[in-house]
Length: 322
Ligand SMILES: NC(=O)c1ccc[n+]([C@@H]2O[C@H](COP(=O)([O-])OP(=O)(O)OC[C@H]3O[C@@H](n4cnc5c(N)ncnc54)[C@H](OP(=O)(O)O)[C@@H]3O)[C@@H](O)[C@H]2O)c1
Image (cartoon, rainbow, N blue to C red; front, side):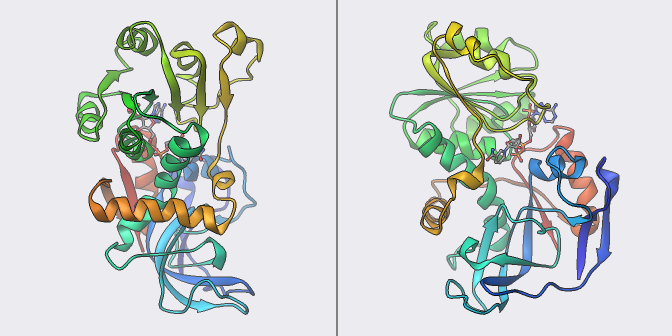
Protein backbone atom coordinates (compact mmCIF):
# COMPACT_ATOMS: atom_id res chain seq x y z
CA UNK A 1 0.00 0.00 0.00
CA UNK A 2 1.01 3.64 -0.35
CA UNK A 3 2.02 5.43 2.86
CA UNK A 4 3.60 8.78 3.72
CA UNK A 5 6.65 8.02 5.88
CA UNK A 6 9.22 9.92 7.94
CA UNK A 7 12.76 8.46 8.09
CA UNK A 8 14.42 11.46 9.74
CA UNK A 9 12.90 14.51 11.42
CA UNK A 10 12.77 17.81 9.57
CA UNK A 11 10.82 20.12 7.27
CA UNK A 12 7.98 19.11 4.96
CA UNK A 13 10.47 17.72 2.45
CA UNK A 14 11.23 14.72 4.69
CA UNK A 15 7.78 13.27 3.88
CA UNK A 16 8.22 10.38 1.45
CA UNK A 17 5.53 8.37 -0.30
CA UNK A 18 6.44 4.68 -0.18
CA UNK A 19 5.06 1.23 -0.88
CA UNK A 20 4.89 -0.81 2.32
CA UNK A 21 3.04 -4.05 3.15
CA UNK A 22 -0.66 -3.80 4.07
CA UNK A 23 -0.77 -4.25 7.88
CA UNK A 24 -2.54 -7.28 9.38
CA UNK A 25 -4.82 -6.87 12.42
CA UNK A 26 -3.75 -8.63 15.61
CA UNK A 27 -6.21 -9.76 18.30
CA UNK A 28 -8.42 -6.85 19.34
CA UNK A 29 -7.54 -4.82 16.23
CA UNK A 30 -9.43 -3.91 13.07
CA UNK A 31 -8.05 -2.86 9.71
CA UNK A 32 -9.53 0.26 8.15
CA UNK A 33 -9.44 0.86 4.40
CA UNK A 34 -8.91 4.60 4.60
CA UNK A 35 -11.14 6.94 2.59
CA UNK A 36 -9.99 10.22 4.14
CA UNK A 37 -7.30 11.21 6.59
CA UNK A 38 -7.19 14.45 8.60
CA UNK A 39 -4.14 16.72 8.65
CA UNK A 40 -3.39 18.16 12.11
CA UNK A 41 -0.76 20.34 13.69
CA UNK A 42 0.40 17.39 15.75
CA UNK A 43 1.57 15.79 12.47
CA UNK A 44 3.97 18.73 12.06
CA UNK A 45 5.29 18.35 15.64
CA UNK A 46 5.88 14.62 14.99
CA UNK A 47 7.53 15.26 11.62
CA UNK A 48 9.87 17.79 13.26
CA UNK A 49 10.65 15.51 16.21
CA UNK A 50 9.10 17.87 18.78
CA UNK A 51 6.89 14.90 19.73
CA UNK A 52 9.42 12.15 18.91
CA UNK A 53 8.31 8.82 17.44
CA UNK A 54 10.54 5.87 16.57
CA UNK A 55 11.66 6.37 12.93
CA UNK A 56 10.74 5.33 10.32
CA UNK A 57 7.03 5.86 10.90
CA UNK A 58 3.89 6.53 8.91
CA UNK A 59 2.52 9.95 9.74
CA UNK A 60 -1.11 10.87 10.53
CA UNK A 61 -3.35 10.58 13.59
CA UNK A 62 -6.93 10.28 12.30
CA UNK A 63 -8.95 8.85 9.48
CA UNK A 64 -12.32 7.58 8.35
CA UNK A 65 -13.03 4.56 6.17
CA UNK A 66 -14.39 1.03 6.07
CA UNK A 67 -13.40 -1.95 8.22
CA UNK A 68 -12.02 -4.60 5.83
CA UNK A 69 -10.50 -7.11 8.28
CA UNK A 70 -10.75 -7.82 12.00
CA UNK A 71 -8.45 -9.64 14.42
CA UNK A 72 -9.46 -12.31 16.88
CA UNK A 73 -11.92 -11.33 19.61
CA UNK A 74 -13.13 -8.07 18.06
CA UNK A 75 -16.72 -7.32 19.09
CA UNK A 76 -16.97 -3.55 18.64
CA UNK A 77 -17.05 -3.50 14.80
CA UNK A 78 -17.59 -5.84 11.83
CA UNK A 79 -16.21 -6.03 8.31
CA UNK A 80 -18.05 -3.46 6.19
CA UNK A 81 -18.70 -0.98 9.03
CA UNK A 82 -17.95 2.65 8.29
CA UNK A 83 -15.78 4.05 11.11
CA UNK A 84 -13.52 6.91 12.17
CA UNK A 85 -10.86 7.36 14.83
CA UNK A 86 -8.27 9.81 16.19
CA UNK A 87 -4.94 9.72 18.05
CA UNK A 88 -3.67 6.47 16.51
CA UNK A 89 -0.53 6.82 14.36
CA UNK A 90 -0.28 5.87 10.70
CA UNK A 91 -3.27 7.41 8.90
CA UNK A 92 -1.42 9.00 5.92
CA UNK A 93 -1.84 5.68 4.12
CA UNK A 94 -4.29 3.46 2.28
CA UNK A 95 -4.87 1.17 5.27
CA UNK A 96 -4.36 1.40 9.03
CA UNK A 97 -4.67 -1.11 11.85
CA UNK A 98 -6.43 0.30 14.90
CA UNK A 99 -7.50 -1.10 18.31
CA UNK A 100 -11.21 -1.82 17.72
CA UNK A 101 -12.19 -0.04 20.96
CA UNK A 102 -10.88 3.21 19.47
CA UNK A 103 -13.21 3.09 16.44
CA UNK A 104 -16.41 5.13 16.34
CA UNK A 105 -19.08 3.76 13.97
CA UNK A 106 -20.28 6.45 11.54
CA UNK A 107 -23.91 7.38 10.96
CA UNK A 108 -25.05 6.80 7.35
CA UNK A 109 -25.57 10.54 6.77
CA UNK A 110 -21.93 11.46 7.47
CA UNK A 111 -19.44 11.17 4.60
CA UNK A 112 -15.86 10.03 5.22
CA UNK A 113 -14.20 13.37 4.53
CA UNK A 114 -16.43 15.11 7.06
CA UNK A 115 -15.82 12.35 9.61
CA UNK A 116 -12.05 12.62 9.16
CA UNK A 117 -12.36 16.39 9.52
CA UNK A 118 -14.35 16.09 12.74
CA UNK A 119 -12.71 13.51 14.95
CA UNK A 120 -9.47 14.96 16.30
CA UNK A 121 -10.20 18.67 16.18
CA UNK A 122 -13.90 18.23 17.06
CA UNK A 123 -13.29 16.01 20.08
CA UNK A 124 -10.66 18.54 21.20
CA UNK A 125 -13.15 21.40 20.98
CA UNK A 126 -15.67 19.18 22.80
CA UNK A 127 -13.46 18.29 25.77
CA UNK A 128 -12.11 21.84 26.16
CA UNK A 129 -15.62 23.33 26.41
CA UNK A 130 -17.31 20.46 28.28
CA UNK A 131 -14.61 19.00 30.54
CA UNK A 132 -11.41 21.06 30.84
CA UNK A 133 -13.35 24.23 31.56
CA UNK A 134 -17.06 23.43 31.24
CA UNK A 135 -18.41 26.73 29.92
CA UNK A 136 -21.65 28.03 31.36
CA UNK A 137 -24.27 30.45 30.07
CA UNK A 138 -23.01 34.04 29.87
CA UNK A 139 -19.41 33.22 30.68
CA UNK A 140 -16.76 34.65 28.37
CA UNK A 141 -14.11 32.64 26.53
CA UNK A 142 -11.10 33.87 24.58
CA UNK A 143 -10.26 31.55 21.67
CA UNK A 144 -6.92 32.01 19.90
CA UNK A 145 -6.50 31.08 16.20
CA UNK A 146 -10.30 31.20 15.97
CA UNK A 147 -10.38 30.49 12.22
CA UNK A 148 -8.17 27.39 12.45
CA UNK A 149 -9.24 23.77 12.37
CA UNK A 150 -9.85 23.49 16.11
CA UNK A 151 -10.68 27.20 16.34
CA UNK A 152 -13.77 27.27 14.12
CA UNK A 153 -15.23 24.25 15.93
CA UNK A 154 -14.31 25.63 19.36
CA UNK A 155 -16.04 28.94 18.65
CA UNK A 156 -19.23 27.17 17.55
CA UNK A 157 -19.33 24.73 20.46
CA UNK A 158 -18.57 27.48 23.01
CA UNK A 159 -21.51 29.44 21.56
CA UNK A 160 -23.72 26.35 21.83
CA UNK A 161 -22.93 26.36 25.57
CA UNK A 162 -24.19 29.92 25.86
CA UNK A 163 -20.84 31.66 26.23
CA UNK A 164 -19.74 34.97 24.84
CA UNK A 165 -16.76 34.28 22.56
CA UNK A 166 -13.89 36.59 21.75
CA UNK A 167 -11.64 35.23 19.00
CA UNK A 168 -8.16 36.17 17.85
CA UNK A 169 -6.93 35.75 14.25
CA UNK A 170 -4.17 37.11 12.03
CA UNK A 171 -6.11 38.47 9.03
CA UNK A 172 -9.36 40.19 8.08
CA UNK A 173 -10.39 37.16 6.02
CA UNK A 174 -9.97 34.90 9.05
CA UNK A 175 -11.89 37.43 11.17
CA UNK A 176 -14.88 37.08 8.83
CA UNK A 177 -14.82 33.30 9.17
CA UNK A 178 -14.57 33.45 12.98
CA UNK A 179 -17.56 35.83 13.05
CA UNK A 180 -19.55 33.54 10.75
CA UNK A 181 -18.80 30.72 13.19
CA UNK A 182 -20.42 32.83 15.92
CA UNK A 183 -17.60 34.78 17.58
CA UNK A 184 -19.07 37.88 19.24
CA UNK A 185 -15.89 39.89 18.84
CA UNK A 186 -12.68 39.21 16.92
CA UNK A 187 -9.27 40.73 17.61
CA UNK A 188 -6.54 40.89 14.96
CA UNK A 189 -3.75 39.84 17.31
CA UNK A 190 -1.10 40.60 14.70
CA UNK A 191 -2.12 44.28 14.83
CA UNK A 192 -3.63 44.95 18.27
CA UNK A 193 -2.54 44.08 21.82
CA UNK A 194 -5.03 41.28 22.45
CA UNK A 195 -4.80 41.44 26.25
CA UNK A 196 -5.59 45.18 26.31
CA UNK A 197 -8.44 44.60 23.84
CA UNK A 198 -9.81 41.70 25.86
CA UNK A 199 -9.75 43.76 29.03
CA UNK A 200 -11.53 46.59 27.20
CA UNK A 201 -14.18 44.26 25.77
CA UNK A 202 -14.88 42.82 29.23
CA UNK A 203 -15.01 46.20 30.99
CA UNK A 204 -11.74 45.40 32.77
CA UNK A 205 -13.09 42.18 34.29
CA UNK A 206 -11.18 39.66 32.16
CA UNK A 207 -12.46 36.40 30.67
CA UNK A 208 -13.37 33.19 32.50
CA UNK A 209 -11.20 31.01 30.28
CA UNK A 210 -8.58 31.33 27.55
CA UNK A 211 -8.25 28.43 25.12
CA UNK A 212 -4.69 28.93 23.86
CA UNK A 213 -3.29 26.71 21.08
CA UNK A 214 -0.71 29.24 19.86
CA UNK A 215 1.73 28.97 22.79
CA UNK A 216 5.02 30.87 22.61
CA UNK A 217 3.70 34.17 21.24
CA UNK A 218 0.44 34.31 23.23
CA UNK A 219 1.02 32.57 26.57
CA UNK A 220 2.13 35.53 28.73
CA UNK A 221 -0.60 37.84 27.52
CA UNK A 222 -3.20 35.08 27.77
CA UNK A 223 -2.59 35.09 31.54
CA UNK A 224 -3.27 38.85 31.54
CA UNK A 225 -6.69 38.32 29.91
CA UNK A 226 -8.13 36.28 32.78
CA UNK A 227 -10.41 37.25 35.66
CA UNK A 228 -9.18 36.36 39.15
CA UNK A 229 -9.28 32.56 39.48
CA UNK A 230 -9.70 32.26 35.69
CA UNK A 231 -8.51 29.25 33.66
CA UNK A 232 -5.83 29.06 31.00
CA UNK A 233 -6.16 25.90 28.93
CA UNK A 234 -2.90 25.81 26.99
CA UNK A 235 -3.62 23.06 24.48
CA UNK A 236 -1.09 23.68 21.71
CA UNK A 237 1.97 25.54 20.49
CA UNK A 238 1.54 26.42 16.82
CA UNK A 239 3.99 29.35 17.29
CA UNK A 240 6.46 27.29 19.34
CA UNK A 241 6.72 25.77 22.84
CA UNK A 242 6.14 27.84 25.98
CA UNK A 243 9.23 28.19 28.21
CA UNK A 244 9.10 26.93 31.83
CA UNK A 245 6.64 28.83 34.05
CA UNK A 246 7.13 29.99 37.66
CA UNK A 247 3.97 28.94 39.58
CA UNK A 248 4.23 32.14 41.65
CA UNK A 249 3.20 34.02 38.52
CA UNK A 250 -0.23 32.39 38.71
CA UNK A 251 -0.69 33.87 42.19
CA UNK A 252 0.42 37.37 41.28
CA UNK A 253 -1.85 37.47 38.22
CA UNK A 254 -4.98 36.50 40.18
CA UNK A 255 -4.76 32.96 41.64
CA UNK A 256 -5.10 31.57 38.13
CA UNK A 257 -5.45 27.94 37.03
CA UNK A 258 -3.17 26.61 34.30
CA UNK A 259 -3.67 23.27 32.58
CA UNK A 260 -1.98 21.63 29.58
CA UNK A 261 -4.64 19.19 28.38
CA UNK A 262 -4.25 16.53 25.71
CA UNK A 263 -6.98 14.64 23.83
CA UNK A 264 -6.00 11.05 24.78
CA UNK A 265 -6.69 11.86 28.46
CA UNK A 266 -10.21 13.00 27.56
CA UNK A 267 -11.15 9.87 25.58
CA UNK A 268 -9.93 7.46 28.24
CA UNK A 269 -12.56 4.80 27.66
CA UNK A 270 -14.96 3.76 24.93
CA UNK A 271 -17.98 5.42 26.58
CA UNK A 272 -16.18 8.78 26.66
CA UNK A 273 -15.00 8.42 23.06
CA UNK A 274 -18.47 7.48 21.78
CA UNK A 275 -20.14 10.28 23.76
CA UNK A 276 -17.87 12.98 22.34
CA UNK A 277 -17.92 11.59 18.78
CA UNK A 278 -21.69 11.00 18.98
CA UNK A 279 -22.37 14.61 20.02
CA UNK A 280 -20.27 15.84 17.11
CA UNK A 281 -22.04 13.53 14.62
CA UNK A 282 -25.47 14.66 15.88
CA UNK A 283 -24.63 18.37 15.80
CA UNK A 284 -23.23 18.01 12.27
CA UNK A 285 -26.30 16.08 11.07
CA UNK A 286 -28.66 18.70 12.53
CA UNK A 287 -26.65 21.54 10.96
CA UNK A 288 -25.89 23.02 14.38
CA UNK A 289 -22.17 22.46 13.82
CA UNK A 290 -20.70 23.46 10.47
CA UNK A 291 -17.50 21.93 9.16
CA UNK A 292 -15.14 23.85 6.97
CA UNK A 293 -12.94 21.65 4.80
CA UNK A 294 -10.50 24.17 3.37
CA UNK A 295 -8.73 21.87 0.93
CA UNK A 296 -8.24 18.21 0.04
CA UNK A 297 -4.95 16.68 -1.12
CA UNK A 298 -3.76 13.32 -2.44
CA UNK A 299 -1.13 11.40 -0.45
CA UNK A 300 1.53 12.59 -2.93
CA UNK A 301 0.69 16.16 -1.91
CA UNK A 302 1.09 15.66 1.87
CA UNK A 303 4.17 17.93 2.02
CA UNK A 304 2.22 20.72 0.36
CA UNK A 305 -0.54 20.34 2.96
CA UNK A 306 2.06 20.66 5.74
CA UNK A 307 3.62 23.76 4.19
CA UNK A 308 0.23 25.43 3.95
CA UNK A 309 -0.71 24.62 7.56
CA UNK A 310 2.65 25.85 8.88
CA UNK A 311 2.46 29.07 6.92
CA UNK A 312 -0.82 30.14 8.61
CA UNK A 313 -2.54 30.16 5.24
CA UNK A 314 -5.28 27.65 6.06
CA UNK A 315 -8.73 28.09 7.52
CA UNK A 316 -10.59 25.09 8.89
CA UNK A 317 -9.51 21.58 7.93
CA UNK A 318 -7.09 19.99 5.49
CA UNK A 319 -7.89 16.43 4.40
CA UNK A 320 -5.81 13.81 2.55
CA UNK A 321 -7.64 11.43 0.22
CA UNK A 322 -5.65 8.27 -0.60
N1 LIG B 1 -3.97 19.29 23.20
C1 LIG B 1 -4.80 18.72 22.36
O1 LIG B 1 -5.54 17.80 22.74
C2 LIG B 1 -4.85 19.19 20.94
C3 LIG B 1 -5.66 18.56 20.01
C4 LIG B 1 -5.76 19.10 18.72
C5 LIG B 1 -5.02 20.22 18.39
N2 LIG B 1 -4.20 20.77 19.31
C6 LIG B 1 -3.42 21.97 19.00
O2 LIG B 1 -4.27 22.98 18.54
C7 LIG B 1 -3.56 23.83 17.64
C8 LIG B 1 -4.38 24.02 16.40
O3 LIG B 1 -4.32 22.83 15.62
P1 LIG B 1 -5.00 22.78 14.21
O4 LIG B 1 -4.61 21.51 13.61
O5 LIG B 1 -6.45 23.12 14.35
O6 LIG B 1 -4.26 23.96 13.44
P2 LIG B 1 -4.84 25.37 12.99
O7 LIG B 1 -5.39 26.09 14.18
O8 LIG B 1 -5.74 25.16 11.84
O9 LIG B 1 -3.55 26.08 12.46
C9 LIG B 1 -2.70 26.77 13.31
C10 LIG B 1 -3.08 28.26 13.45
O10 LIG B 1 -2.31 28.79 14.51
C11 LIG B 1 -2.12 30.16 14.28
N3 LIG B 1 -0.71 30.52 14.46
C12 LIG B 1 -0.26 31.52 15.25
N4 LIG B 1 1.05 31.63 15.18
C13 LIG B 1 1.49 30.69 14.32
C14 LIG B 1 2.77 30.34 13.81
N5 LIG B 1 3.89 30.97 14.21
N6 LIG B 1 2.85 29.32 12.93
C15 LIG B 1 1.77 28.67 12.53
N7 LIG B 1 0.51 28.96 12.96
C16 LIG B 1 0.38 29.98 13.85
C17 LIG B 1 -2.56 30.45 12.85
O11 LIG B 1 -3.81 31.16 12.91
P3 LIG B 1 -3.76 32.76 12.73
O12 LIG B 1 -3.21 32.98 11.36
O13 LIG B 1 -5.15 33.22 12.88
O14 LIG B 1 -2.84 33.24 13.80
C18 LIG B 1 -2.72 29.08 12.24
O15 LIG B 1 -3.68 29.06 11.20
C19 LIG B 1 -2.18 23.19 17.46
O16 LIG B 1 -1.29 23.84 18.33
C20 LIG B 1 -2.42 21.77 17.90
O17 LIG B 1 -1.26 21.14 18.35
C21 LIG B 1 -4.10 20.28 20.56
